[in-house]
Length: 173
Length: 101
Image 1 (tube, rainbow over the protein chains, first blue to last red):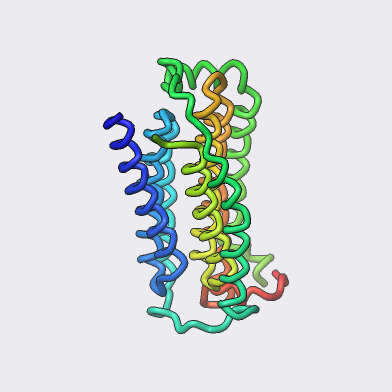
Image 2: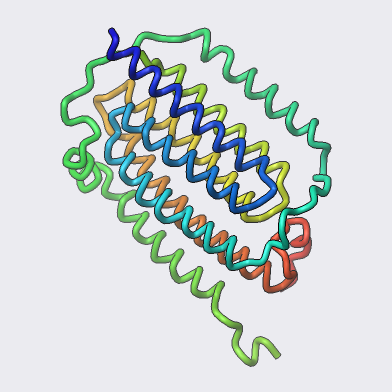
């Protein structure tokens, strides 16, 4: 019982860090602080995945998201001159309209979920979420999406090279 | 103990945080970060549904593939941001209001 309470406390702490990181992303004027807030969110979500016994997903969250995507964002932020903290110019709708809409829709969606708190099946198979089982699944039952993602990565690489190269002489003139 | 509701509330809050930021912010890099937030909310939902039906691995596999897709999307988005910076000198999305090459 104390173990479950401890798990719940860890979950609340991780969730609070994740939500605070998300709020930092959308409120901070400096893009680098946004990137650090995103990093906090991603790392604490990796902790949530560990609590969910999804160990391989947690590892890849740290490796790919926190290690790759955040570095890419930081590189882009430092590469492109941002001109300091930006003055807030109005969006296409007032801020409070958007915030009220999203907050109201969130409450509308979340309230039934809170009311229907269901009991947990605490029994997970002992190899649930391990790298061994996930590797077996990825290479047998889920082979088609796995290979499709490989093709997608190749297409992305070609596309990014085509986007980022200098235009040819005759195309430029 | 953690119930499915806890995870779904966390997922929804993350998703709507990202959605609010995507509607509010005009910096293209921050918009991309908000897309990442929304995808992470969806991943939390997938992993937690899989946790409470532990006889299959489908949610986790979908999350892994989604993480790879998010990486690809971030790379393409940042390349587009670099191009936008070349054309307009800024990375604000409201400066990209015309699609002429």
